[in-house]
Amino acid sequence: LEWQLRKSDTLNVVGELAAGIAHEIRNPMTALKGFIQLLQGSIKDDYSMYFDVIMSELKRIESIITEFLVLAKPQAVQYKQNDVCKIMKDTIDLISAQAMMHNVQIIADFEEKLPLLYCEPNQLKQVFINILKNAIEVMPKGGDIHVRIRKIGTDYVRISVTDQGCGIPQDKIKKLGEPFYTTKERGTGLGLMVSYKIIEEHQGKIDVESEVGVGTTFHITLPIERVDTDDEETGVYHI
Ligand code: ADP
Ligand code: MG
Image (cartoon, rainbow, N blue to C red; front, side):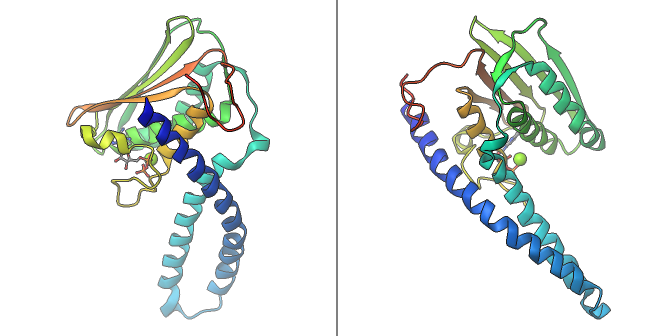
């Protein structure tokens, strides 16, 4: 428990700082891209391959910034009662083309008549996308992803995403959600950091179960009602 609190403090500071920086970087980036595209037409063919590299690296910076900006849009955040199954269904639709391309089948198993959750649908969608994308990426030869949604006791709903990928060694599980922790050659190591942060803002938690060579399950547990906290402003929650 103590460890969880320390980790969430770090996430708060890093998240806010990074989101602020991301905002500042985005405008000059847009200008850079525009002018480089303009130049492209007036330069010798010998150099055109350099342009491809420049554009692809700029796009990479852009994707890193986009992941951070999810954290930095307070004006777009709108908490209200939502159907979490509908949000997950929409997300699965969104990602189904990518899944199909990788020979991955997404199997949904949702409990019926679940209560509405007090949540921010776009942010939850972002979390579901990040976790489903990771699940697809760890199954290069294809496989099944099971998405289960269940009520837990009277106060919580749990969304579980199970893949048949490489799994995560026990000692690496605690690194998940750390900014820039990635084992992928072209990974950002930001998807889970953003997801942990969003779920924490929803007063929920993410637990990971994994067996190397068998697969991984991400459990997202969310409260049905928002619990009033002692100190909302500083994010210090008394448990
Ligand atoms: P990225 O996908 O860019 O690497 P993430 O924050 O989404 O960044 O994930 C961080 C790391 O966590 C991944 O690089 C991978 O090592 C590990 N990981 C996440 N999801 C899974 C999964 N379903 N199976 C195995 N490893 C995973
Ligand atoms: Mg990822």
